[in-house]
Image (tube, rainbow, N blue to C red; front, side, top):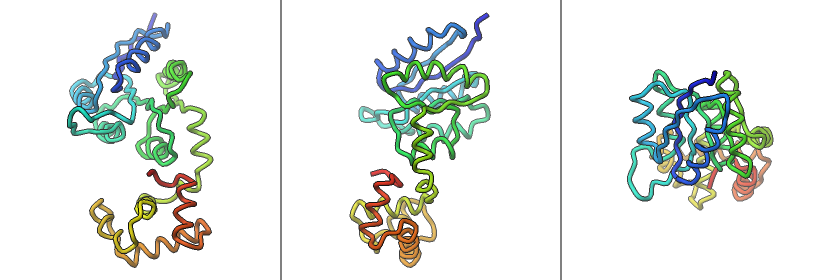
Length: 224
């Protein structure tokens, strides 16, 4: 007898959504009921009001150009639904492969699967359902490889990542304190920031701030 499962799909491109739905309906072991929404606000409303979804499949990049939404990204959606009492299992299905984002989604937010969109990703997505409904997890091979490759750089905390990102964008050290305070960081005096930059130079064996930022960018410590 087929297992009945309820799935919510968050995908802003209709062709991509239709492809996912068609491929999942081909899985012989399950009788799937799949709801599809193209924005995170509608997704959260469904998850908040209807607690019988077994699985959420969501992209991280959701187009919000045509309308203003309260929840603009898949990342923000995941953070909000993790606070619900009965949140479903989660698969991220996305093209995003930056180490910082992978680390955040997998190790901080904690999801059950992360699949990079690509030529054979629909088959991998279908395959992952078996593992996840059995209580296991599944991550694309290149996801695991990326996290291993950039493991040391990922130990850099969020404040340091933002310091490096602002330096990369051309801000001066004496401008960083107010920028970081506005982002909600504490202990961001100029002296603290200068000490952090010094420690980062030591960590990456960089002699100048320019060299430090170049090394951090190469190691993908921060996103542009």
